Image 1 (cartoon, helix red, strand yellow):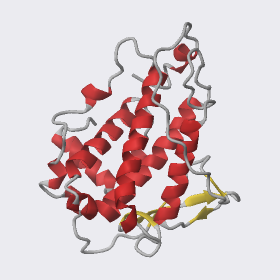
Image 2 (cartoon, helix red, strand yellow; image 1 turned 90 degrees about the vertical axis):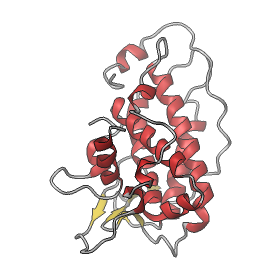
Image 3 (cartoon, helix red, strand yellow; image 1 turned 90 degrees about the horizontal axis):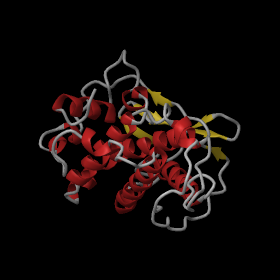
Image 4 (cartoon, rainbow, N blue to C red; image 1 turned 120 degrees about the vertical axis):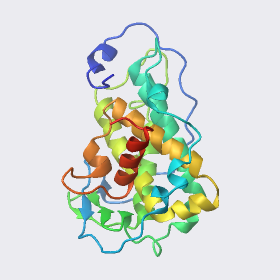
Length: 256
């Protein structure tokens, strides 16, 4: 089902809504940074390096490690009688909470010295759009802190994520969620590229892989994620999580 094709029907529904999500923990104040997250900042791709070692997350048995066996299509389908925007909202909440917990565990290993750029592959870096609408390089921990604080503030904002009965989602909700999804994808991408060894050390690769596969399947099902955000241009080989996405499609974990 298309999230965006059903937006008109969902916005016109009548009657009170069902039980709401659990309260979101209070977030820290947004950093006094001259940055914005209104639009997607570009990814910087440099020339490929010869002889790059295959990432661990693409190697067996790690690429197969998962808590959920089979195709993720079945667990992302909209349940009967559930409003689509409620379904999207509660899943965004869960994805954010779980990703935030994973990053919190490995954050000691993500420093300005070890991760001076928001890298997602040997030739792929993400940049931030500042208040002057210019792309700037930020250390990964700074970039991730901005993203997670921004998302937390959105979740805490009743105007964006209403929790009271009878209160509707704003008309801007679908576009806001697409921005959220794109930025959370980048956090996943950095962890896979720079910190998967820590995930393995914790023996948490089945949990992390299942979380990410669920995230990808949900994003594609409700058109929250563009293919180019995951794998880049179709004219060049996929790198980073794009290669993982392609591999999981070959394995039948994700649909094409």
